[in-house]
Amino acid sequence: MATARQKFSRYSRRYVVPIILVMLVSIPTWFISTCIDKCWDNNTLPFCLKHCLLGADLEFEMLYIRISPFEPSPSLLKSGDTLRSGDYYRLTWIPRQKSHVYIFQVTNSKEIYPLFPISDFQGVPLEHSNPLKAGKFYGTPSMSQWFALDEQSGNEAFYFLATLDQDSQLEQHIKVLQTALEKNDPEQVQVAQDNLRQIFEAKQEVSLTKPLDKRQKIQANRKDFELPLQLLSVCDECVYKLNFTHQ
Image (tube, rainbow, N blue to C red; front, side, top):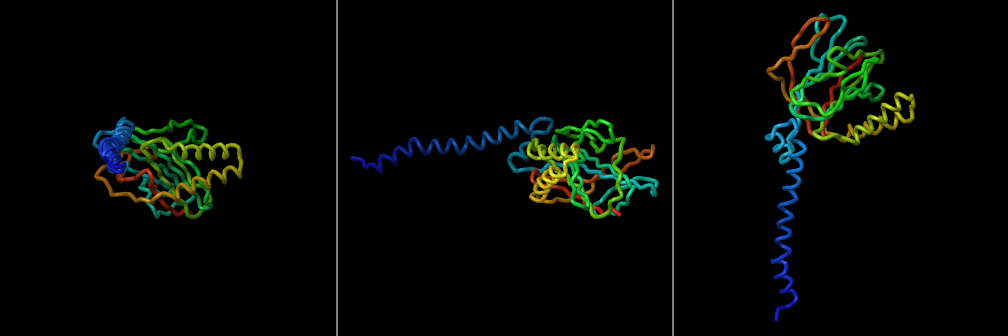
């Protein structure tokens, strides 16, 4: 007569083991299928396979631009540069994949201000919205406007974050901050900025990968110029930080 242990062993081989094997195969397959389905919208299938199977980074062709009243033409804004009050800057990029982008400026006094997406600039409505299409040239504040440095000097930085899917938590913090700024509520502004700062600090910093053999035409002072693009690879848990000194 078979013992209880033998009966359980036969039962396990017949029923439990196949169920576990099916789960081990079906759960990753479901996850990969769902990931690819969400990714495969204006993105290529090879990228979606790499992203879902290997965690491939999002790629951007970056061009941060600066222009000074004392210089005749615009130039690349690079990490470590020195800018002066009255200088102008525009942040532009081309996504290689459909993605969500969030850009911030952190001042010398650690105040955080969203630069993208924003609804308007100097009273002019802006068409800022996520997600962004692959291959399209984007810029903030816009392709016809520039940010200007104020009189507050010190060390400042731009933070560039990108995700394949919408980052609802980050967007909620941005919404709270923008509402607090509009209502001139210092306490809520501080809370929202602290929450954003924690998100920045939890992410891994990345650098521009390499210069590209590709130039982008821009317009400044009613003239056309061409500046080189640089490649940025960034993961969902990464941040690209460009530091500069404001004199």
